[in-house]
Image 1 (cartoon, rainbow, N blue to C red):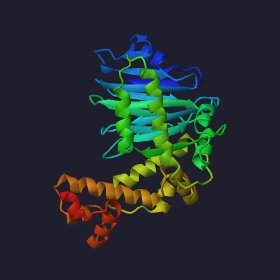
Image 2 (cartoon, rainbow, N blue to C red):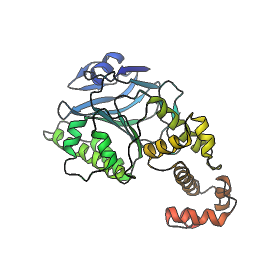
Image 3 (cartoon, one colour):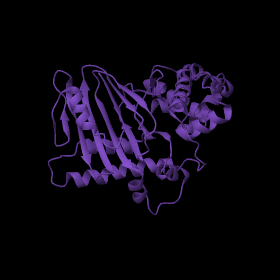
Image 4 (tube, rainbow, N blue to C red):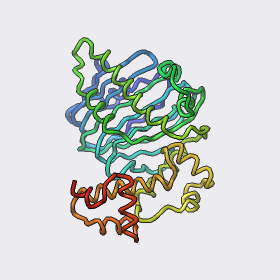
Length: 326
């Protein structure tokens, strides 16, 4: 299934998606027909400028959602929370879809309304994700009194174009689960859910303001796609350190532009991101209990196992062998 839409100010996902799958929409709830799978899509409105859409289903075939950028800037900010350990593919512009992560697909994507994107959800997998839509003035009001930061200023600025990715913390995963399990028949459920969604935003912004407060560099859909391709290449070969010059050539960017946009989008430099992913992969392999410390180190490109052990201990606070036994 491929559901395409344009993110115009008057677009209503529930109504159009229900029409696409030929299912009734009642009180902002669409139940997935049995011949397509099981589950639901629900929308909760917290005003004309703030809403939540909850996707909770298992489908019989892949679902591809294509969002076309709006022609006009309506100040809509979209925050996508995907909490699952199943493959998630995401792409910008018209390039092939890129897998977001190898071991844990739990991720947060925050984007302005002028970027087109394509997301593919695999069939026969439990899909749990939420999309928060909020307009810049409402977000600015919620953030009133906060310490100034470049990221927050970018989000609330008129005509700003941005894309940010964040990993999902255990605290955020638990909160998402709690929101999904709210009894919507309870008289105060709507009030409670709105509070919890604002808590979600707090947890996200708390991480974003830890980033370096640098001037924002504008980007477009093509830039976003190239950044994901670079990131995918880093994760595909964790045994080979990245060469910035080669990555910049492949991304059709200058080295300076690639460094700036990558750090802005993912929160760290290319090499730091690569090193963190390498340590995360090492932790995953060690926990499986099927590889020795030496095997993991060599597989991830370390010729000096002492260096691998020191670096791992710096990241996780334990020697690799003790970590594998913990």
